[in-house]
Length: 226
Image 1 (cartoon, rainbow, N blue to C red):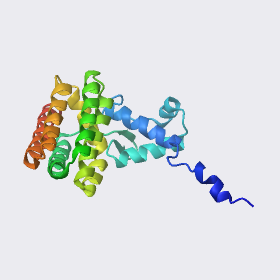
Image 2: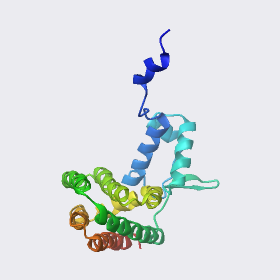
Image 3: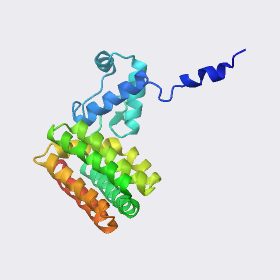
Image 4: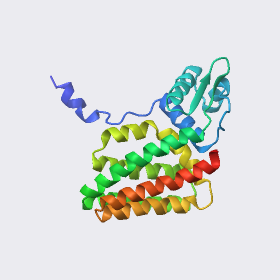
């Protein structure tokens, strides 16, 4: 008798397809981050069911998850609504980003080899292309990949977990600052400075470039949120 285990070995699903809940979550998250849903706007289950074509149970799961990400506020007797951004919250996020990203960039600069530098250069090329399209969601995806490589190379895995927990709010702030004049030019330029320092294996310059990049974004956000 043939061994069915051997026969099915080639059929293993390495990357399972996204579930309906995961698709709905991704679309809702992107809608909030991009500003399609405004801060303070109520999220009505029946309307969302119609818009996304999913059941109320899926919508409730999605809203609970978005609440854990800090994108949704659930107020008793009022229902869920899009969380409002405050400067105090944003300030803390920028302070965390500055500390974690500068430390990771410095360590990445110390250990980056030709392979890592080539990966970062390829991401920068993508960033140049997406910046010209003026598409914040595309810029967010590429920027996230740039930092993922930096944190992965630095070995700062716990720090990357913290950044990922804050990622939805970080992305929301990024979209907000990208909407201001010239930020789709100055932001990528700052990121290129971080790469240049890593390419030279200069930890101090990499950390300084990171802090400058975050500080510039924080100044823009403070002007918008105060």
